[in-house]
Length: 69
Image (cartoon, rainbow, N blue to C red; front, side, top):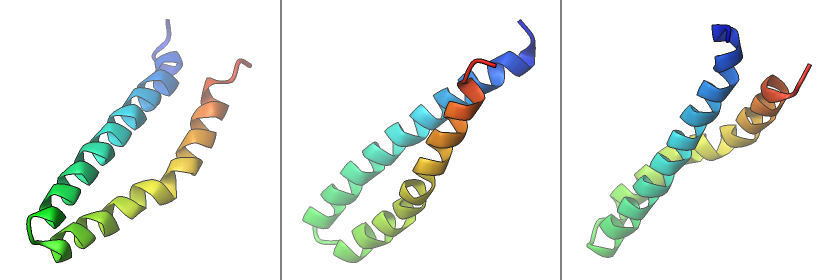
């Protein structure tokens, strides 16, 4: 299998990891907020917004890359 065939699968797995990390970090920010640091939690959620903003583009691009030719 040519390495170019592996690229879409690799990107898909990287995206899955990114979303899992986002979920874990969100859980941590909720814990931080509950333990008295709402400013820190807000900063973390602000940084996570970038992942949310890019998610649709990544999904669409992966769909195109993974579509049979």
